[in-house]
Length: 448
Image 1 (spheres, rainbow, N blue to C red):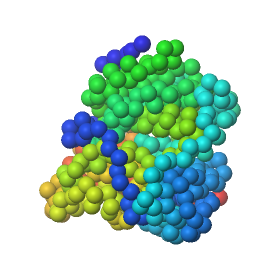
Image 2: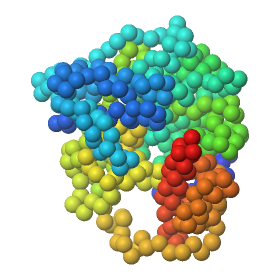
Image 3: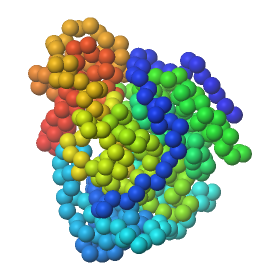
Image 4: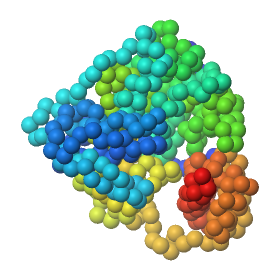
């Protein structure tokens, strides 16, 4: 069963250069271990995991080294067979220092990953599947890093009728999901029955943008007999891969302000997350590496690599080579990713890509000068959820954060960056919104 839709899209959005040609055809390669792997205890939304190893202890690749702390937390696993050198603070993308486990690999080890009790989608109960996903440490690998078991737990009184497997990958430069669909289609198809069983949903649709026709064909061929899955091809537009936009494009349903996909009977799971579930659960294994794109003009040996969790950025860049005049390094793509402040930050489960730019792309300071808003309205035409980024930006500059949330739906913004992309005045709108959201959350927590 297949579907090809030409009108399957959403209103507004933008068309940034795709920049995928350099890596889309390159197969996934295994990345070497760093001299020390730095495994943060917080790689997901929620509470940090609790370390259950001691300094000096020997660990095996794939072994659980930290247990979940409550429901909104997941387990951590050793990315390498070696010895725990220390448990200490390490720099994180947030700019803060977070607790991490430092592991030095054994040079002579075979590095065979540890396996545990296998789970079968046919015989396992929904509760067993959710527990296994949490135990395997699986989070959203599309960048959000939301604990997958928490997302799949349907609240009382709600139900979903459709599971969308998100293979849109609309972010420029990123080609990891594309390669996973081409090379690990069987794992994706093995993961879907676990998701359907855990949620009680009757059907799944694999959603792929039209610039990945080879992936769509591969996924169609991989559908096992009797599995209620179809493949849908969507027009290329950013941010097609955002949950709310995908639900609107595929199902014609609009997630309400402040609402979640389950409120309109839908669930979205990233395709790489689905593949990991299909790979790990039948082996009783934990996630200890992930596929990411190393790309951008600043990187010499561009490609898609399976990188051990906890690999420091500095080691990544030194291994693949980088241009002398590198000026910015992004975790994730240039639209929704974050520029890093330190190369000592390690790769986490939420790292979809490491994209490096040189002075030629980032330009000089004069080109990036911010000008006053000219009220051109481009940002209103670009915003896929019909916010008023211009007004939000002005309020943000004045520090009126609560008003942004109360009157202008700031918290509905998912920071896609479409407004910043089209702004002729170079106003860093998304940065203003991130600062404002942090302030609103802080005020809310203080009021509690």
